[in-house]
Length: 429
Image 1 (tube, helix red, strand yellow):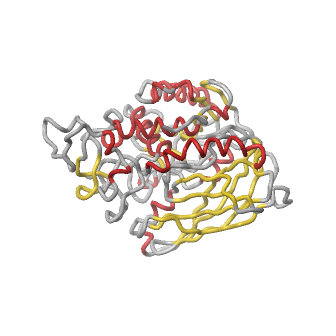
Image 2: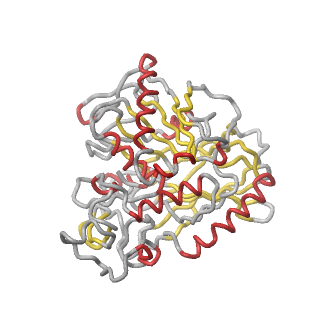
Image 3: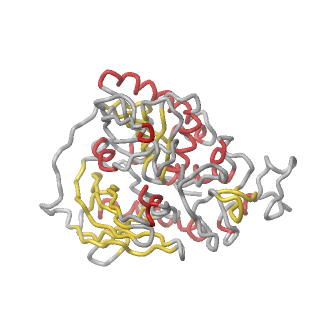
């Protein structure tokens, strides 16, 4: 359900690409350092702690575009060369814990949630920093800093179980492609053929949807057959619990259609030997539901009639950092956005810094905000109502994939294309 590009940052992308290309082999090897960590806290505060570090055999991400130019997400991981404190890698992301902190439960409880993120494996001693965005000022503040020696005996190098993996779409070397990985959830050993067929169907749905249809050649697609003991997923609100590989379930935060898993470690264990830029959990169930968090994962059910568009909507969150544009549906969040500041998502605005959003795409003479009537709703504008709020947050068109499964609007489409370029090691325009 949930998930700013400044002119300066976009202009800097070419320089960032050149820097990364020059320095990848100096600082990194094409393996991954997986960082499992916990986020602990409540509505008032949070802290982070490293759980474990793992060396894993594949790095499928960019080798030129190492510095994240987008400023998306509630968290950033920054990697510095220990010798001179030079930033050599960064990436923004979201977590389910971040969303939980906006719920009523977080006002009364303190919890610890596991998380995981991978970076290219360093060749030199580095400093890893995890930062979190404070909604009071929308700036990133450090949660954790830790030195890492890549030769340390305390980095786990043991192999994990390899799942049967099918390459659905092969367009070339992973370092130059976006590697989209479907992971089976709630599929038993006897249902693995169904999983591969479902993953193929979802792949077809994605690449018949603009603007993804124009960039199919920039993707590889994998189907990772994690095996569950039982078929389906948890429906806790109805007392149904299943023994599945990734521990997914409906009723996240008490919302019946919100389908997620808090178990990021199991997800990363499933793809430890597969190149991976984007993850979609394909859940073997029929009931409508799904979820998506930027640069974390997205998920949805395989067999609901609305599944193909739900998949594309949730993938918009996790892949391109797109916000929900609806404002009247049930959610568990309270005051999710601080309207005194510009939200980071590229497809919504509070008009505090609209120039960093889709202002440059507006037709000449478009009023801001844009009144909604029969002559304007299908045109690019600035329409009030988005981000779970009917007032003070604005969306680009009346009906978009990120509101009610219409086509992606021009603002969303541009953000998707930029992310495809970034992850496939091309210049971001």
